[in-house]
Amino acid sequence: MFVKKLLEKIKLKISYIGLIFFFDLFRKKTKPKNVFLNYRKSEIRNIFKKLHGKKTLFLQTQIGRGGGKWLIDILNTINSVSAYGERNPNPEAFFRYSRSHGLKNYDNQLLDLVKSEIISDWQNHQTSYVSSPYFSHGIDFLDKKLNPKKIVILLPSAKRLLTSLKNKGWYNKSSKIDISKFYSKPLNIKYKNHFYGRMLNLGIENSKFNSLSQVGKIAFFMSKTLEKIYHQLLNIDGDKILIFRLDEADQNYDYCKNFISKLGLKLIINKKNFLKLKKRSSAYYENKSLNLSPKEINELKVNLKKFKYYEKKIISQFESNHTF
Picture 1 (tube, rainbow, N blue to C red):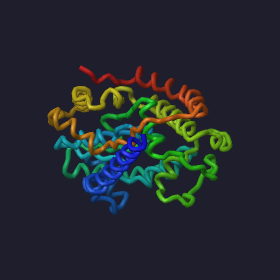
Picture 2: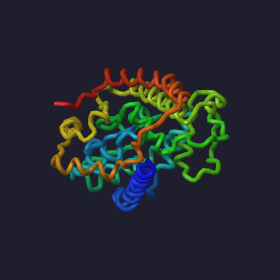
Picture 3: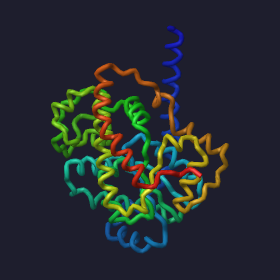
Picture 4: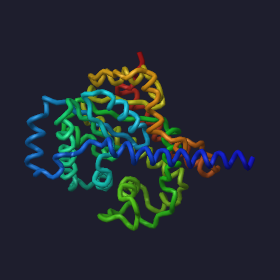
């Protein structure tokens, strides 16, 4: 038993180190360079306006931990596409954080930053694919201002999402901050995007939220965020919306090929090479099975009712079947 546990710990550690190694040496190097980052806002807006209609744009969002990096890697095998997720995590997270408090004063600043990324992609590619979970609270705003060809929503199962968020350490420490209060600066937290991306105003009394277990907090966050996404989708042309169901797409070549065809693109990579892509975007430790306490199980049942309700509505109302 001791040896088995030791081997499991070693496997988890290697998995974690491997993903960090890949992220540092591969993903950061493949991030498209934003050559328009320091241009004047008026110049960025004019270039975007000039190219829009001649080039193609896709936007993608999700609750988080939904297979976004994997799908990005698949799309980047297509020569005409420049795809990347969480290009500017701190500003994007602050955008979501602000909007969770009903504040829109940061909208235009984020919009100009996203436009600069898009037109930078368009310099050498026909298609720009911009993804971020932090768009979850403003995807209807971005659709209105950017008018992409399609809006993609990543939708993993509740179990898969909860497992990944738990293993990534979401809400693993008690926080003394009031989530209903807006903070313009993060409080003694190393990663700003972790503060702004997680400590959202979820419409719940702070004392009640803090009384929940880590699993209860994650489940509540998942449900409220999916609800937020759904109500925004109602403001967007339904024909533009595609749902990417991770549990069906996972290592499913035909599903992904058909999904990509609905973007008006063609997947050239063969099945053998397709199946290799997941190894560099998903780590074993992220999917480690959870052992839940009775309190966690009870909170999970209560707080996931809303998630499952909106999951069914999204799947039934928008295109999500990408099987042949």
